[in-house]
Image 1 (spheres, rainbow, N blue to C red):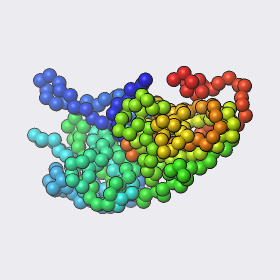
Image 2: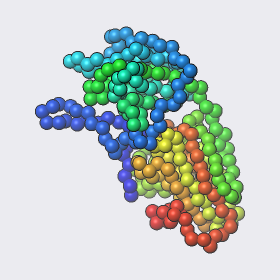
Image 3: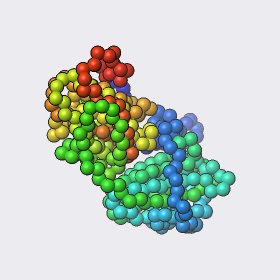
Image 4: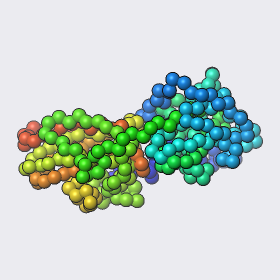
Length: 334
């Protein structure tokens, strides 16, 4: 059984003690998926620049921004204490918050950003490096409530220098019609090439609620992300489903499984796939042993995980005498 770290939708920074040097930040490659995360999304044509004003080192004196603003010029300057810049803004429930840093001039300041709830303490999202760059990106975070949010910007390992922060709040996508099993979209025989977005979906199905590692489930893990559902009507045994499922960004940890009873997904799951960290694309191959109605659930391992997705492959309705595909072999002997 592969072992995943506890749920982390985003890269983290670890603190360890080095002899004689106090606390030192180290980046953990096991948790980072930098190579699989795209560089920042395209910016709007223009931002309204708001110059940084100190002091802004806490929630009490956070600098007010509006969605569509850029904090620039801005810089981190460390003295006896490390400089952390705070911003505050308002967003509506369901909006997609994108909070990013980038260069402003020649400086390549290595930043760490965090999104906090209205209490100024509850962490909602955290990011260190965006792809191969030293900058940071929290992309399309779904606002859980209408009200005040805080953002913090600090330098990794005491990095300092100029930077800019861009803040956008996009309208929420429409809730997909196949958010739940009663609206599941039927998949017919033949090639499968489907795509969609689950950011506005809800977490309706979980293979093992509250337990990230769950050896009893058909994937070995729980699935607390946002999910969408497809229906497969099987008239007789022998149909073969062979698909790959991926979420964006490319490092997002997807989970896919096939159930017969949506009210009891864990106990009725007949096949599933949830690869370990670093192997985010899921492959599911299954030969239906009995006739009936099955539900294919596209889910995520990360809490509230979801986004643009693709599902490709085929549903073969003829009993095949061809050798098993690589995906089928993996499912049979996993």
